[in-house]
Length: 437
Image (cartoon, rainbow, N blue to C red):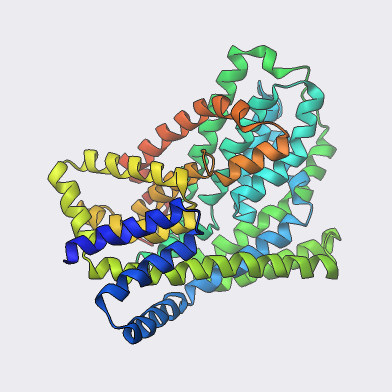
């Protein structure tokens, strides 16, 4: 009976999602419906309520609303233009320079805001008008913006990594944050290399854009304006790694830093702060409800021995670790095409983590390549949120962008395989910091 429960749980969940029911509601309803078949109604009500309450009763989870708030404040602070100008100093003269500026800007802005969608919108709005004015191929430019916007979800601070830390049973957030740097940078470099190749092979895509030249005084002024925004990363990561603050306390510091910076830039007033607060509450409540609902589902998964069944099924196919990791990656790529990162992390971490532990894979390493994998999902159809936002900002149809996006997805898949099969890429920095063995 237990073996079939897991299948019924996933089947009910799949039917609800196919019917268009929101993911969070689908998770909760499928779990409660299955519980009603095996428990009295009173027990179901008490158990589901307890599991939802205990699921969000975590000090670490407080970091999420604070990082969301800090990101929203920074998004209103006019930092996109400052970071774009800063990126021009470094990559503004490489062939296809605007594409490289876009990638670097997304890496910096995404790291500051923690949101791929925010990066695609803010950097896209700043750069794409100049792209259109220069006559650069818009589908390619939009593809570059979309492909590179998830880099900030790996480069910390990352809400996805915080969610994974909690769901995986307390994996060190500091270790996860440090582990995300190299894979996030490699993802950005892969986009830059592919953009270089495309603009080199198709010079007509470059339009009539002329690279900017800066005097020393201008370069120093641009750097001076950008450094305070980038300082947020130092505040957050430095406080965590230095042992000064936990991830939650660092998130509070990020809010304070963002408020001070927005006051200096004169970009945020009381009316904007009210809007920011409401937006933060809406986003955070959705995430926390998802986590609470997934706690009920995780309880039912454990009751049905679903992780053990999946592990047994994978090992029955092959005992080769390389093949099993490839299967897991392919499954997650498919999942990411239909589900946002947070619910995917909540549902599939408890399923796949026991499998990779049997293979001797560190939970930190698994968290990084799982997050990398799901990052790609938000830029792929049919439900890639960053894909839709990027196309909207570029004022271009999705069908025109998808074809140009494919080379970038292939480059990112290559990096994903490197990160998966070369653990040192993600584990090196945490080991240097003494956060993992």
